[in-house]
Length: 234
Image (cartoon, rainbow, N blue to C red; front, side, top):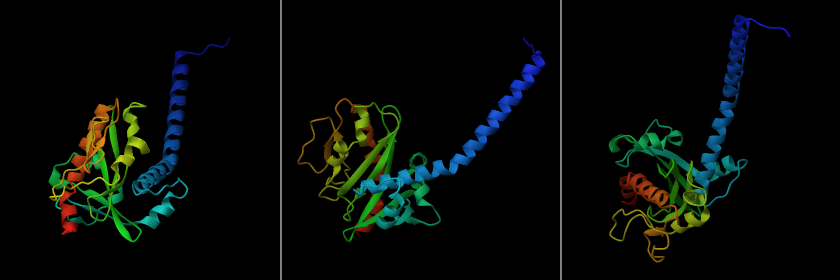
């Protein structure tokens, strides 16, 4: 059996590590554009889902171009901000800023000769981040649809926020009460929400912390748009 010196083994191992690292680096750089494109398509699918338009990876871009007619950023005073790519805004980073420094994206769609206003939301669940989109009818109070996602909530419990059964509850709910005050939609303990209420839905049985996270996410994110909503209404 042939033996090798320690120096030979060290040099050989070092060369192999360098070669593997270089190959991984090249692979990562090559795949990066595809990964970025997949993230973009997934985001467009989620935006479309919030207005109840089903899409696939193949037709998402076409449907997005068809239904989404305007995208822009605003500040918390409700004023449009120029020179900002609203599609790429990271809500996690924006919500970490002081209120008056946030840039907030707005997506406007058109269905049945009416406009819808799609607002991204971002918050914290039990095990990690939760996020989604809330679509409002042109009165800027009535919810047309929602979509929520998560990174690591418990299957069968908190992870149920991404199911139609949970999300459909928000259809027709109101962000503003009859006096015009912003109240959002409250997520209550499972089975306790009044089905006739315009402002509350049932939380997830066994997923209390995630439900609380969704409740806080909606209030925190949507309240940042309150001035914009009022400006449009007026």
